[in-house]
Length: 582
Image (cartoon, rainbow, N blue to C red; front, side, top):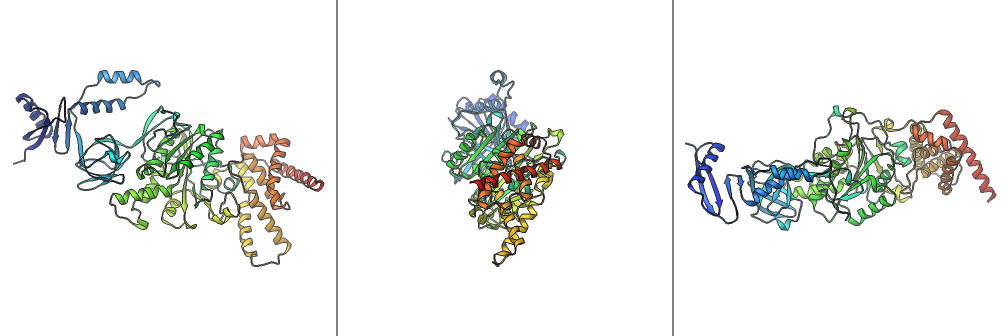
């Protein structure tokens, strides 16, 4: 014989006979079988009752019905930007329903993590709401309990408090109004400029675009840095890792790349993970003063925020970028940096009681970043043709690229730009190591002009570095070797750039053609910076049409290449005469 269904009715007064019969009929129809209904007197549910059947709860109190109304209003879509009529219609047509909730109970809370029992049907990644209004996300599923990370003040969550499912995954508001603003990992503004009107709401975790929904990466996303655009080009839709030790200019490369997108119809999103709030404020000021903030969104989960906020920040930024990508826009997103992101996830995992593995990271730490970076794509024309280019940043210790997190992300991305400490301290900015850096997209992401201008620069630099190491052990060098060394040293100087000064395409082409034509062969190293600035000004005056044509078409004919060489030699002759006169 089957056990009867056990149900508890909490109310201020016992039900009448007719009410009890309706309760029994409802439960019998819903669950089948005999019903055992127990009444528990409680003043906690004014104006109604609460019916508990196992883990399911029917809350017919004032608070329960109000929560139903609130949930209904949050799902009201905007129409022509005016939500007031829609809200009015929703309120007039709404009526409460006898729907069940699954309620749990907090058994422990601390360090931004709560253990909850009673949520037997909850899903991984689902948002749950605590009785105080604080929200959390399920991150650990066990036989008798679930582990939740908290997105609010944990002091408002106490043992014994109730938790109810929302049956929704975590999401953030998105829209055009977020441009020029700074928000936290939940999409709430943190720049003191007031609320942001969202155009929609997107889950922070979605599946990456399928292969059939993508197309090849074949359009360049220029960084404005000669060292990168000439040798390690980045395409729209690519994932290029920026990796190096602390304080070697990783963020500077990302920032210059953002500045170089001005006027190119590219939406830029900068995600700051575990950084000081003052550093993020300085970055925003740098963007604002240079006119770049208007096409940027800054998502910040600072070092002072919980590990939970740092964990979801890159996914939130990615969701904001996907909104624009699906509108057919080109998006650049910077994750600064994923080392701190992995550390935040490790902290959460250890607090949740997961088994640690290599370097104490959980076993799924590779999936943590692969499901994020795989969402960068160049969508097919049928999907709008938009793109999202990802520049993840990873910090190494002592130049060790073989550590766990760096090797994980290197295997996920389409190439890496490795910044070397010794080059940085020697004054080479950006301090790009030519031997360890690579772009797996390569020339497909270069304009024809850049591909032609760059020529054999990477090979020339590799030969120079090899010869430089060899000649350290010899003081007697022949003239040909000395000439080769001077040429290589000149190339390295040409690749030096000040921060916040990205070069336009035509400027890079002119510099590369002139340098590889050995125009700067005999110029003293400390004079190359001045010569470079003068050469670009000379071309702007004497060959403005050529510069504009290269910038617009991205092409360079053999005749135009010869013209650049001839004009460069003319400027060199003028420069030498001026030097001799001085």
